[in-house]
Amino acid sequence: MRKIVLLSCLLAGCGGGGGGGSFTPPPATDPNAWVQGVFKPASSFAAQCAAPRTGVDSTGTPFPDTAGSVLTQNNWLRSWSHDWYLWYGEIADKDPAQYTTTAYFDLLKTTGLSMSGQPKDRFHFTYPTDQWLALSQSGVESGYGAHWLFIANTPPRQLVVAYVEPGASAALAGLDRGTEILAIDGVDLVNANDQASIDTLNAGISPAAVGETHQFVVRDFGAATSRTVTLQSQNVTNSSVMNVLVFNTASGNVGYMQFNDHLGGAEKALVDAITTLKSQNITDLILDIRYNSGGYLDIASEAAYMIAGDAATAGKAFERTQFNDKYPNTNPVTGQTLTPTPFIATSQGFGQQPTNVALPTLNLSRVFVITGPDTCSASESIINGLRGADIEVIQIGETTCGKPYGFYPQDNCGTTYFSIQFEGVNEKGFGDYSDGFSPGGAVGSTGAQLPGCAVLDDFTFALGNDHEARIAAALAYRDNPTCPAMAMGLQKPGGSGVASLAAAHGRLVRSPLLENRLYRH
Image (tube, rainbow, N blue to C red):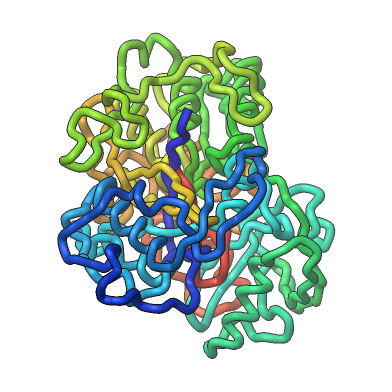
């Protein structure tokens, strides 16, 4: 089964491979020379690479690469985008011989704007194929096990730790939620603005390989002084689900789980978490997806089914996909007739989870979701899909990223490309949330409005602690559907001191400092 992945890019853009470098324009008689508006089939250029790979990939599949050039790579991108890109008619057709592959791919998207004035396509990016396979299949990536959060990504910057993976080098060095990063390898992170310094910061935040060591000056949350730690990069398996807890309240047991991504390892983790919560006879669920930027749509569908159960979802679509106007009835990637993605009731065999096993269900009529700017793509599909099945979704936190779109990752010459190919709508035909979902009281937001409370991210307490502001607001809302006054306003904190980190909002980083990549399916 070809996996669909819905990913997003939320800071200054997205980066990755691309096969760039020097190139030589073709002679005028070259049969592949550019003719504006004329597109040969993408298959006539596929896997013709400037630097062909040899051998097999991590799944044991032989590389299809043959000798080619930067031009053949660009011609493939041009034809592939013209055929499958959702807004193909809005791509300016420019001569591929004039650009490196990285620069050319950046041009192959719409320049249109959303209703709020944001770029309509903020989700156009690449990943080195070997890294993408490792990440998507097992959640493994090179790093320290620290999930960084930018509260401000331009000077004066604020970079803090959102959470850490247990046992990873960041945890062993004592980094924890709210730890602020002040400098990396001698470079002032807060104020540096020259390119050499930015490169140093990027290299430290997102190490390219296992075994790298970088020196960090940090200030722990609540501390008056800084300290210096050395972190060594390692292969880190990201935890898809953490902090599966039950809060015992006078009005019933409330389940909580921190759901971080929809990648391959998430399926078994979700099944185990829902099984645990079901055994505790919970009457409500708080689904914390504030840092979940997406992954596989099938896993999002499974998560929604396990929350709602069979009776609420039977015969209903979780999501209906719509491609560009060349493919009104057919999926151009699979060649199959378009059919809705159902609420999936049996496991699909991602990661270590066996296939065709009936999924456990909570059979809830409502769910509290904790959200932030990194709640994106597949995570937003959970919200939208449940609402389409008449499950009440109460939103606590901030406006989500706004990505009702998806793509099939496509490798060519060692780079995997993510270019929007479809949009999704729920059972009721709703999919108009390109400016995100916004909780009640999010003043000035243009996102689709949901009941709930606007609440800033709170670094005073650990995730999973019932005193943490967003969790506390969700618990309070159950008994009295009003919002605490301190939760309103969502203003960016000023300065870079520790006090401003107690309540803040920002963007999660899973890639270099100014190039954040996030996922959805």
